[in-house]
Image (cartoon, rainbow, N blue to C red; front, side):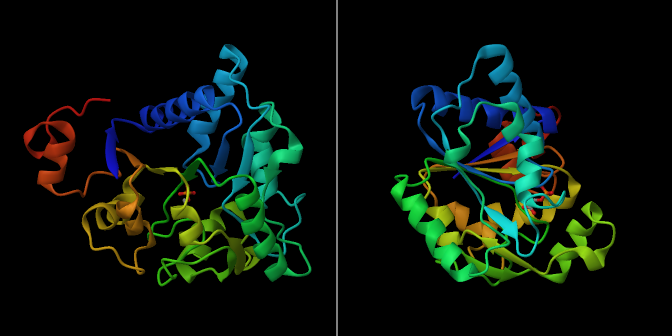
Length: 261
Ligand code: PGA
């Protein structure tokens, strides 16, 4: 795992978009794993800009999203289907037949989970997976305590995640309690990982994931075991890293004064 410190959210987002674009130019039919949440929005904006201004071509790309709420139809403005359409899909030239988001309305959720794993296998596996991190250290909806070898399955959201996500809903009661999520084992099989974190709210989770022991209670800590993982953080998300780690990342004692971007 490589930790990359960038000054601002915009710098973090640009760095991530540059990695995606470089891999895409090298392999136009790449399999790209996507994430929802506020964190990757800046990266998506930059990819859209590259598509419009530089002709970055997504026509042969296959995508798999990490997760979806159970019980929300794709037309619901808080479903992850809807989110992805607004944030990315409607603005680039993806082929809709190669786009995958778990079906939260499926009558047989277990069958959908198995099918999702099978589709990823048939596509040849995920080349590059984008991840955010929850303030409790979750990746996708793999909450603390999730098995580190888990596969795509249905999960119950923790109270903290429901609270974190309530800001997007009219009230907390409307936040679904169940989600379909790729498992940690599924995520770890991706060829490369980009994990993004910005803001003070993520500083504890970043410290625990980067410096702490690998534990199911901090699911993002498993990323330490991935040989090609890029953990890209902005200054505030990195603010609780140990002085030694900051010095290592910035080349300056205590990470001061300026952190290069
Ligand atoms: P956020 O969520 O990007 O909205 O902070 C990240 C996550 O929960 O994985």
